[in-house]
Length: 282
Image (spheres, rainbow, N blue to C red):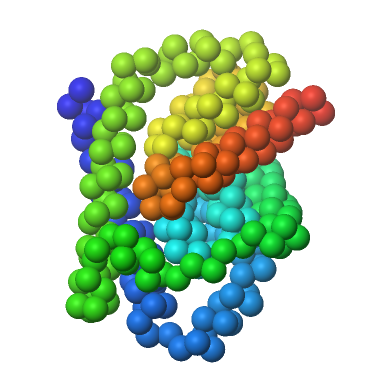
């Protein structure tokens, strides 16, 4: 149990640089940029899913947290957020590299996640524009919600935001690690074994665990030939690390957040089932 707590603390501490950078950027946008710069950011937003999906494939949990905070402040679009969630790889890449998985396999998985994230992101933004439901919210709304006293300076405000969300993430990581420890990874493996169609559905549920441990479990099960590549990809597409936990804390509207989670889950599962039916083997 001590190891569980140590791992949770370690995973949370690793996020601090990403949280700090995100909030410094947001504070800078609020306090330092001019209207012309803000208009330029909004105009470049249509390329967000492309940029988000590319950045998301790098092996870290923190970028999904950063993207979630930026979405909560409406700096990025919903399509960009989903693109990041779908493409983020968390611990998959380090595990693949440490296990000497062929480069062709690694590249194939990353390309699938990148392409799915990019396409889904652009489609979502296109539909949102058609429905005219994009919202115009300011970063100041986040500051008011957190009572951070932004007028006291960029550094102090960013630090307050950073540590507020850090302790929330730490709590989530501790709880999730205890749950996984209690159930046991071997039982989760047995649950997914020999489920050709249900595999992606069940793996998607594992991907919803708001912790990097979900990518570790799915990747290890694939390497041990417990699940197929389609099942693994389905879970990894859904897996957004602690970004999902942060979404419910920072983004207003429980119904909206549930819809985002349902959308993410549906995309991951459908893509996994399609890969399974086509018979793609990597």
